[in-house]
Image (cartoon, rainbow, N blue to C red; front, side, top):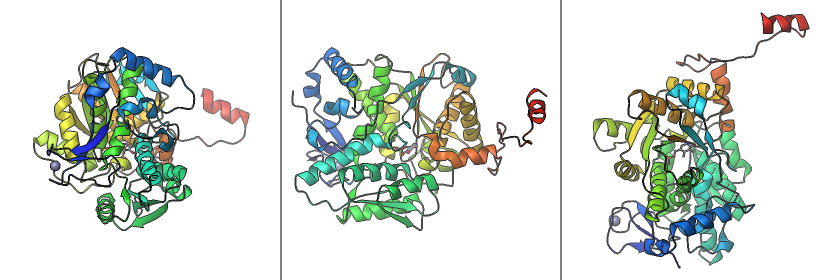
Length: 435
Ligand SMILES: *Cc1c(COP(=O)(O)O)cnc(C)c1O
Ligand SMILES: [Zn+2]
């Protein structure tokens, strides 16, 4: 078996077939997005049983990676010596029955992708992109730097993996729109951090232009390589559920690459006979940055909006690069789109935390959307739902603190639990505790 993979036109232009390391991010013929296409017959020459046994065996090995455990399905021809890994993937799929029951979804699971090296699921895609660049550099290709525009998590991941591979990293950030905790990661990893006067979409335009001038290699998710790593979330979910595909997978969505990546992962599993169906996708957006939601609701094309400030900063994107990809994923999975207001996401997050979880605002958007869809009957009673928890909530301490201080304007912090200040006196403490 010698599986291979090439970059092809997402819209299917004939004859467009590029090496995965080609510094080309759009179809040379039609200008649309690119997609990594795998040699399916080669992969299908191994039986489903053999694939399962292989994954099981690799997973038991210490020091591995949930992405590279499935290298054949991700970047089959990459020289293993070029892999740049920080132990990404292999994250917990956590049942949340009690909290789920409160949402009307007792068969609720959270895929804790935020329990990862840089604290978000962006590590999954970044290990693939940086490994491919590392490979190209080892073969003598002149790549001066890798760069991205980012609201935080992408830059944190790129900077860490770049540092690991000794590749120069350039990060463009919207000035004043990223939390200190997020900004400090690329700084600490040694990246060149440039804070631009503008929003995320403006940073995106600048990085895109620099990449097309050949100044740097583009690491944003327009780059199809990232999605190959992100799709392994689907592999892990399916394997953890003993190859029983859940009814729904819920993904907080901004630039819209991940919804597509997760669909692509499930599609590949089905093509290989490892599973027998696709889950339905529920893509969850913040109401303040909801171009996909509007398009879905109004049955129109996705039109860019000006993204307003939302607590869910990683999905605060008004002009999503991967909109065509997400639309295809929705179509193929009979998917839906729901949105959450700031108030709704705060309440969902606080309730989740009260059940022993500790969720980031994006995961809170996904949980709020899950509950709304259940109430509307879109999610049927008893269906199994997996929510992709995308970042570690420890990156969003400011949000938690402000919520519990009741300091978020316009949000009624009904579950705020501020500390009680008392004298250092046993009687006073006892009175406070037992009333
Ligand atoms: C990137 C990101 C998302 C959204 O992924 P898209 O592909 O941009 O839709 C959601 N949550 C977190 C924490 C992220 O970093
Ligand atoms: Zn094309």
